[in-house]
Length: 247
Image (cartoon, rainbow, N blue to C red; front, side, top):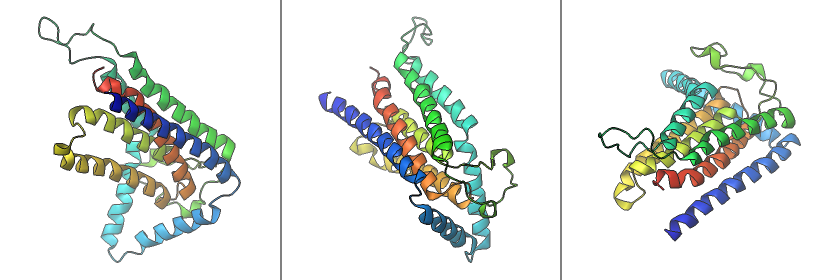
């Protein structure tokens, strides 16, 4: 039990560390850090995909990256946050004497940390957009400005940090916290966790690369979003772990 407690403290510490990195990284981005790397990375990623000899594959990749935007959109992630909060807030495992769920049972107020930290993540994104003032990619770099997902394209003046990347990373950590309740991190579940971890990692990478390929964000925007989402995601993971463990 003591070792588990230390691990949770370690997770929270790393989360705070990532948020500190986000703050200092934001200051450097405001000064022009990675400016050349931003442009070069975007051009190379777009050229590598667009000039592929398999045109059909290029089209599929573009559609997948564009579609992934929906699963990291503010509306979708907000709904997921509400659902996860409700799942953690009420102890539905306890049964009443009639065999049904104990609706009036234990309420875990600590679960409210999920929407609170998600809200702080949004404030962190607003801070970046209004303080760092990092110009968004030029219009000619944007891929498919009119797509099958037109409502998710917004030509913002400033692009730092990537809110989609931040939300994707945050949701990844929170979902992993819940999954550990059903699939414990033990040796016999190694293969399951390779699949689970790989799926979450793939989701985050597709969203992050998609923001660059589609011309909505620079590399530095994605890094900043990753630090922001990772910081609040790890804080959430460390704090709600006792809830998931049934404490």
